[in-house]
Every structure is written in C-alpha cells, then in structure tokens.
Amino acid sequence: MLKQSVYSLLVFCFLMTIFYGCQQKDNAPLPILGRETIVGKDTIPHKIPPFNFISQDSVVITNKTLSDHIYIADFFFTNCPSICPKVMKQMLRLHDAYQSKPTVKLVSHTLDPKRDSVAVLKRYANNLGVDQNKWLFLTGEKDELLDMADDYFVVAYEDEDAPGGFDHSGKIILVDKQGHVRAFCEGTDPKDVDDFFLDVDKLLAEYEEK
Amino acid sequence: MKRSSLFILSLLIILLSCHQGSYKEGERLYSAYCSNCHMDDGTGLAAINPPLLNADFLNADPLSLPCIIRYGIKGKIMVNGIEYDQAMVGYPKLSDAQINNLTNYIYQKFNYHHQDFSFKEIQDRLNQCQ
Image (cartoon, rainbow over all chains, first blue to last red; front, side, top):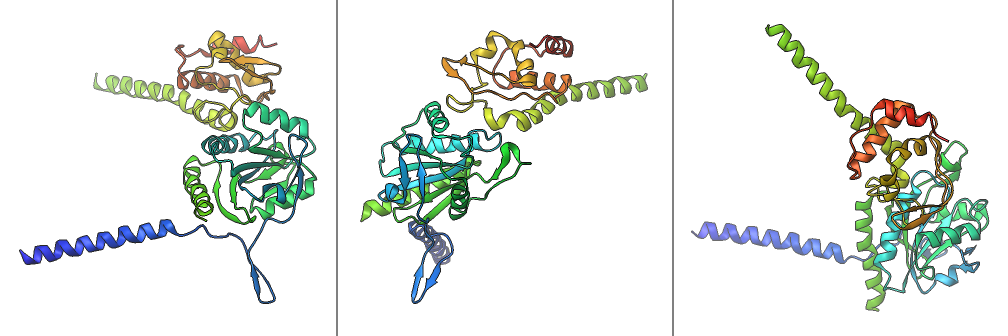
C-alpha cells in the first residue's frame, strides 16, 4: 500500500517536472537570429541593414517606415510559376489573422523589378484583396533586392534555367521593431506556418508587456 | 476449368488496377503542373489564380478544360463571381492521353458530377481547339 503511494507520488512529480519544464520552454523569448559582429568590446546582433524601396503606392519605404512595427517578410515575383502562389496563400492567412493588430505589417519584396513595376505590384495587391496600408509590395534596384534577401536569410538568385528566371526559397521571416530577425518558417508548408503564428504572437506579447 | 478462372481473375485485377492508374496519373500530373497555382485543394489564390473546386466556369462547359490545359487562356474570365485577368500558360508537351487523365482527375477530385471523359472525346475536342 505504501509502496504504491510512493510510486504514484514519484510518477506525479515526474509528470509535473515535465509539464513545468515544457511551460518554461514556451515562455523563453524568441532568439535574435543571425551572426553577431564584434566591434571592439561590443557584440552587435544581426540586423536588417538600411534599405530604400518603393511600394505599390509609389511610397518610398525605408527601415524608418517600419521602425514602429513588427513585420512579416517574404520574397516573390508576380510571374513566378513555382512556389510563390503557395507562399502567398500562407501570407494571406497571416494578413487575415493579424488584421486587428496595426503593429503587424507584411512586406513582400519582388525579385524581378524589371517586370514587377509599381503598377504591376499595385494590380497584384488589388487582386489579392488585402489591406494595402498593412501589406507593402516593394520594388527597387535589382541588386539591392537580391542582396536584401541575403540579410533575411532567404536564398534568392537569378537563374535563367529556373522556372520564371529566379531560384529562391519560400521562407517567411519575422522581424522585430529593432530590425532583428526573430523567427522564420517555410512558406510552402502550412504546418510550419501554424507554428510561425505562435512566434508572431510571442513577439507581439513581448512588446505589449513593456 | 481452374486455369481459365485464374486467367479471368488475373485479367480483372490488371484491368481494375489500370483504371486506378488513370487517377493516380492524373494526380501526379496535377501535382506537377497545376497545384502550384491552383493549390492542392483546388481553391486557387484570391483574384489571381481561379479555383478549380466547384468552379462554375468549368461546370458550364466541362470540355473547355482540355484546350485550356494545352494552350492556356488569356483575357478576362468570371469564375464564381470573381473576375480574373491573368494569363495562364499552356502545356503543349502534354499528350492527349495525359490531358485525358488530368481532366478526369480534376473533375473527380473537385466535386464535379461527370462521368470520366473517354480518350476519344478528349482527343476530338483537342483537335478542335481554337
């Protein structure tokens, strides 16, 4: 009888430890992703470098425009016959879910500024039927756009043998108000995006708690 | 007597599995050529890529699909009350048989109540594409 009680107690304690331990893991803040730079005594975490692009409404968009927002970024082009529509479908999910959170913005960069002019991006955004104050479609200098993909840890390069002329990954990236990359997911995988929602909520909570 | 039964049974099994094969082939083709834009579940993407799932456009003229697959489509179209104006590329390298399988797969997968089109029906239609 005593042996059974001790045993039950041990099992209970074990389960509580695991439960508590898992809770603690969930409460850990999102990491800052990317390689740090050491300048003298300072360790500087990776940050999105200064940029200058044009939105579908012909507005100049820089880091300053987004400095008071957390944003969800991806790279695409309108003539993309491969992964882009599927990634856009997931970006739409995110757009719809965070409609009531003005802190959250979405930023889609084109990799193909030659064909994706401001007018083409405007038409695309209109057809997507989204809130265009919330979701920016950016174009600009091709080299700057391709280099920017690097800073977002998104593989992207021109390849005439690739479908549509560009080879790129479908990653969706989460950036905080200081320009740090805090999370990412594979935009072609709806289940991975399910987990990404939790990361966005966590980052939002980080700012709401302050 | 036993041998002929076995033969008939084998023949039946082969015939049945061949029929299963046409949807499997259609599914493979759908995944390779169509799902990127029209999605695995056929719901399309907003007013950019139209849905195939319960699309009134296809219901109105089911035999329009083979020509669209081979030659694509341009210009404004209305699907389930939404206007689409983005050109779709065609796939001229797909054979008549492949288009037959793909058409039948799309119709059986996305809730249309048509019997499968025969190879001859599809081939005749493809010969008349404008």
